[in-house]
Length: 295
Image (cartoon, rainbow, N blue to C red):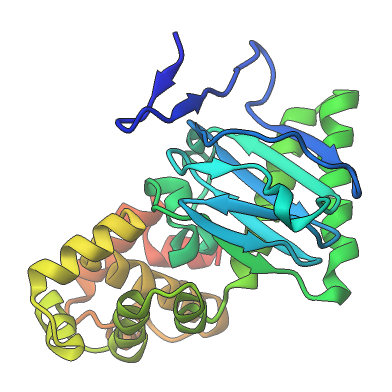
C-alpha cells in the first residue's frame, strides 16, 4: 500500500535489494524533456548534480531554476515536483538515492556536523538545499558519479566498500561546497539560523548556552530551540558540541598541545568533561584519537 504524508502527498519508498548496497545511481541526459510529475516525497535521500542548466525543480513549494553545476539535496519527507515544463528542457546530470540509515554507520567525519547536511543524519527540513559546484570542479564531480555507477554495475570484489567510499566522497564534497555556513544560510533565506550559527562560531571557545544565543538574536530560548530543531534536526546544544568537536579534532591534528589545552581552547573548563564528550561523539578518547592518526 502506498504511504502518504498527512496532506495526501504520496511517498515513494526505497526498494532494498537483498545482498546489494542500499545505494542507487542514475544518469539523466540533457535536452530530454522530463514527463510531468505530480508532487511526491521519498523515504530516502536524493543527491542531484546538474552538469547543464535548464528547466526547474520545485521542492517544498519553492521553485529553483537549474544552473550548470547545481547540486540539490532532497531529504526524506520533502515534497518535490521533478520538472516544471514552463522553464524548458532539463539539463543533464546525475542522481544518487540512498536511505539515511546508510550514513549512520562508520567512523565519524566532519561533514556530519555541517548545518546544511545535518538532515542527512537527523531528519528533514521543509525545502531542499541547493549548492553550486564551481566550473573548475565539475569534471571531478562527474567522475565521482561515474565511478560510483561503475562499481555498482561491475560488482567486483570489495565493491560494497567502494560504493560507500564513493558516496562518502560525494557527501564530503557537498559539505565543502557550503563551508561558509552563515553565508549559505543567508542565501537560503534562513536569517535566524544564520544568526544562531554566527554566534556559535564567534563564541564556541567560551562558556556558551542557549540563553546566551537567544539573547544575542533577540528571541526567547523556546523560539530559538523550536526553530533550530525543526530546521536542522538537532538542538542548539548539540550544535555547540559539534562545533567544539570540530575545533578539537583540528587542534588534535595540527598541534601537540596537551589535552587540557585542547579542552580550554574549545570551550571546556573541565578536561575530564571534555574527554567524556569527545568519547561519546567519537568512541575513543582525545589522546587515543591523536595517537591512532584519526585526526
